Length: 403
Image: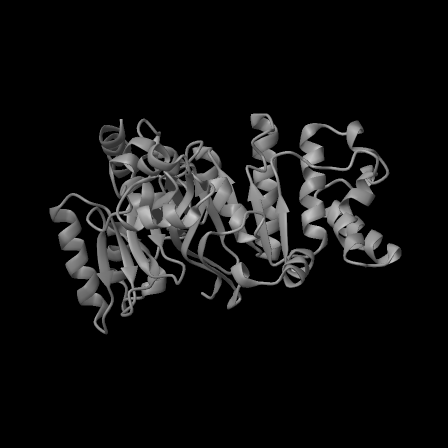
């Protein structure tokens, strides 16, 4: 997976003598100590991270943690004090003003918490505004604007004024305006936080839908845990201007890097974020790796299942990929035939699920069957099974660990 952005040792100090603050940082003083001694504020402290092509990368933290400053450093709405911002191999921090303007017009867009729409312009003209600034002709820019308004479901409101729209619809216009210039990188600063919970969820789902079709690179600032976990491929947790942990939602939730991150998620209902891969086990269901002697394979499996009072087994090929599920009865029936047939022994209608499905999907599948639920990875390799008993045991365990 290729990188879209790489940030190295990025710092921002607000105050009259940033170099003094930088020397104090190097000497080991933290943000609070520097403020007490100098009155200067360290907004971002030696941030190091990368964002992959097509990824939604969420910057998360409490108020004052530095997340909004950091996202504004990426397009130099805030000028960095120190460090590099590499976009496609070019250092944004050293671009001339002319080159920076071109970058913002053609390859980078930003969506703010405030809708920032021009009240005297129609929805169509607001959407096309960035293209107009870039010198695109009226016919071409209006055609493009209508295309993106259709993507966000507002094509019928093109001639309305912003004041005639609800808050959620206005934010859709803001999103459409960002999409109109067809950027490869979108920066979104608390973009949905001004909306009510229902509208916020709708906008999150719309963003994920558009992302599934267009695969843009998105850096998204949020203070909302539900939002970060819902949309983020990876999350960076910030505290005191520093990035204290980066990982997938599950990685951070289950392996917090320090006491601050652990406290950040205290009381979170972990079960809401469990995936099939977090629950699956290989110990509950017998695994049959087929050989050339299928009769011996089945005979041995039947004996093991009866000895342990089990009824089902999963069959995998020599490479470990899922083949199907068998039962004691289906194997015995096959063994009674003149020649043992694997296809004839496989239970009909048993399909595996992939490891990245949610707990809700796992539960939906389990209520439809009394059989263990087989789980595979994206390449079809067998990961194990989930039974109703395993699921309940895991949910109780997670509740005890994170309560």
